[in-house]
Amino acid sequence: KMSKSIGNTIAPSDIVEKDGADILRLWVASVDYTEDFKMSPELLDQVKESYRKIRNTYRFLLGNLFDFNPSKDKVDFKNMMKYDQYMMVKLNQTAKNFVSFTLSNFYLDFTKDILYIEKQDSLVRRSVQTVICEVLDVMVRLLAPILPYTSEEVYQMMPGVKEESVHLLSMKDI
Image (tube, rainbow, N blue to C red; front, side, top):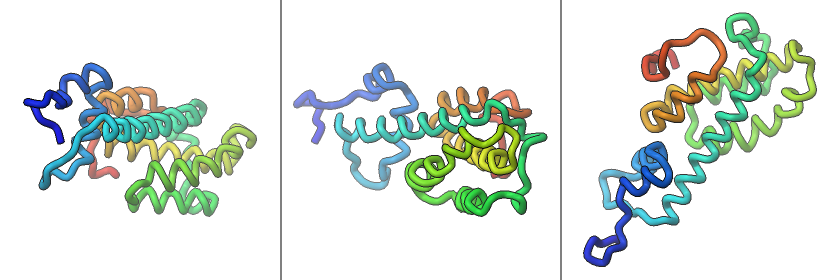
């Protein structure tokens, strides 16, 4: 238990100074505000690990869209490979733990070879790129209120025509 008199509190300003405001926001978004919540260096480390996974996922998605133009390369759902259609359905359901489990542990691992080996403009590669472009778009919109700086940074690197800021996008388009 934290107590000011004991001196074992963690000041929000210390977290922001050391780890950034997005880490603090992610922690706040993860606690049950209806009950007393716990804070410790160990819990903060778990939040940092979650943030690291989100950031690494963003980096992987962006890195594989360098040659993808959504306006001309996007593949229609009916022409996608079955595993790509599966991911689009999962994305649209916005399943809990989507980034950590379904996306990172399954889909990205499964499709790496396709992204790296297939011809640049092959249907199978463009199909995967269409999915990761859609995933990135949904993720950046959903996480923008919680991770505003990171989301803005990622949004500015995304391919295609876009608004001036991720924070000007509508959630209705998801």
